[in-house]
Each structure stands twice: as C-alpha cells, then as structure tokens.
Image (tube, rainbow, N blue to C red; front, side):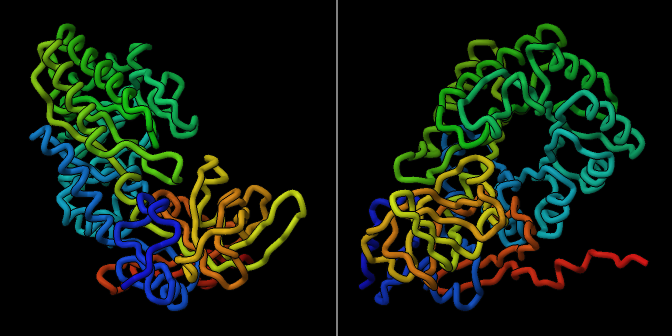
Length: 446
C-alpha cells in the first residue's frame, strides 16, 4: 500500500489527481515515479498527468453543457500549446483558441478541426489573417477597428466570407494582477463600449460584404477569483447588444465572456469550482437576455489555465545551498526564470515538495532560487520543505500553465523536455533542446 503524502491533504487540491507516494517514499504521478522520470529524462522536466487533463476538460465542458445546451468550451492554447496536448483536447470535444500564426500552425499540424478554431490577438498581421481564412477556421475575433478594415479587405481579395466576433471592452475590473487585467478602459485589448468604438465596429462589420458578424466577445482578465466580475461583464455586454438591436437592427447569434477562471496555486488561496463560474455566467446571461427581450445566443467560454495548470508538475534537481544567518536560506535548482518566468513577472506563488522524500514532514523553510544571472530569479519564497539537500528532486505542482510557452533561452538555457504520464507509462512528447538547437538558426558572417 502506498504511503500517504505528508503534505496531504494540504497539497491534494494542487497536485494532479493521480499523485501518490510509493513504497520508496517517492512522489508518483500517473503511476510513474517522479524520481525515476527525472533520472531518465533529466531536469528541469515538465510532467503532465493525462488523467487530470481529461478530467479538467470534462469538468468544464459538463459544467457549462448541463446548464446551457448551446455552449462550447474552447481551450485557450496560449496556456500551453503542443501537438500531444491539442490532440487530447480535440479528442475531448473542445474547441480551440489560438493567438498567432504559430499557434494556428501547431493546431493544424495536430489535426485539430479548423472549424473549431478561433483566432484572437490585438495585432494580427495580414499574413496571419490570410492563413486563418485559407485554413477555414471557425471564427476570427476582431480586436480593433484597424484589424476590421484589414480583414474586410483580405477577405474580399480572397473572395472568402469571414465569420467574426467583435472583442469589446466592457469596462469591468476583476481585481486580478494588473498585467493580466484585460477588460478595463485602459487596455490594449478590445474596442471600448464607453468611447463609442464598439458601436462603430458594429456599423462597419455589418456594412462589410465579406464579413459575417456573428456576435460579441469580451475577456476581463486572467486568474479571476472575483466571480461577480463575470456577472457584471455579461450584464454590460447584453445591454450593449440590446442597444445595437435598437440602433442597427442587429441581434447577436453568439456571445463569449472569455475565460480567465482561477486555479489554486497555493494552499491559502483556493479557487472557485468550474460549476461556480458556469452557474454565474449562465444564470446572468439568461436573466439579462430575458430583461432585454433578446434570444439566447450560442455561448463560447475560453478556459486555458484551468485545464492545464493542475495537470503539470515541474521537476528540478537541487544544487547549491546558501545560508545567511538570521536572514534566509537559499537553495538553488537547475531551472528558474528561463522555464518559469511567472514568479519574476507576476509575483506568482507556488508550493513545492521533495519528490524523493515525499512522505517526510516539511521541517525547514527555504527560498528556492533559479540558476540564472538575475537577482529576481526566485521561484518560491519561504516554502517549507523536508531537509532539502544537493541532488534532491524538487517537485513544483500547478506548473502546467504558461511556464512552457513563456520559456526562453536566457543565458542560452535549453528549454526543458515534456512527458505525458498515464497508468504507469511515460511518453516523451517534447525532447529537451540541445546546444545544436541553440546554434541552428545562427548565420556566420564574413
């Protein structure tokens, strides 16, 4: 019988669903020994539990599907894009959001059905819009008036009719981090209802012969714990829709309140259940449409982080130790801001445990530092661990979202390998970069 994690039930809601401790006292994920994974594939290593990924897809799809028959959950792939993951998401029946030509290319290479793909972005290039139209993707989410004009021109030249949603700014502050707040007036995203740009966009979209205006979209931010912000946004958007019906005779067929649903990273900040978000969005949408006499639109929601964050665990090898008496103890790992910039960029917080002594009681508070040449390269401040020492494997849960896509080659770092685990089998889905990869795009001079 496997031992119980000493950190559980404290970390049970943060670790993947399959996390356990084996007879050796090692952390296991998806039936695989995390220490053995680190030995086989090296560190830093990102491990994704397939059972947790599928569970999150189904939990979100079912939460909205039970309440609103005409709904679709579209995975926001900027949280993590890869062939293996996108194939899994497609198998689970979800749609897909992409925000660049690169993400679109990966989605198409994964065989993702183009009619279930939506393209976002505040500065889409002409080539990206052409690629989206030629691929026959389902929707283009138009972010601004310049893009609206460019898309109308490109669609005309290609003799294609583009199905579009207009991304609007409802002026709602979700009180999340300022770098991931997107629905306020002073934002680079969306067309403001307050300034009149939103109405101008409706007029121009309806007048464009090669654009088919399907409805409206908004997104208020990411890692949103204040669920009432979604109710405010839905109310504002449906009131705007009613106003546009009165002024321009247009009734939207589709509506999206975006995504941004929060996940739990640390024990003292639990996140709302998907059912909470679904209930609030659907109930508010029903009430708002009834109040304004509008038919219920088809609903799209766009979770990213809430699908992949919990499924991913980052594994590092501990190296040096530095004790500053009366101040703090630093332990350094073989990764850091090159594979997870979120702590440096957002002040993001994480928990951790020693994977090779997962059943041991945490007895020392340390700060986990990365290996890169920046004082800000700190992964976790003041975390309790079980006597960490050189050669231990450090596991950082809830690392599945944004770490990998925001990774860099800073200090000529090699981007980490990624494995998917399921029922005791580990599958390498992305190899670790090599020095040759770093040099491959360089051109000699002279």
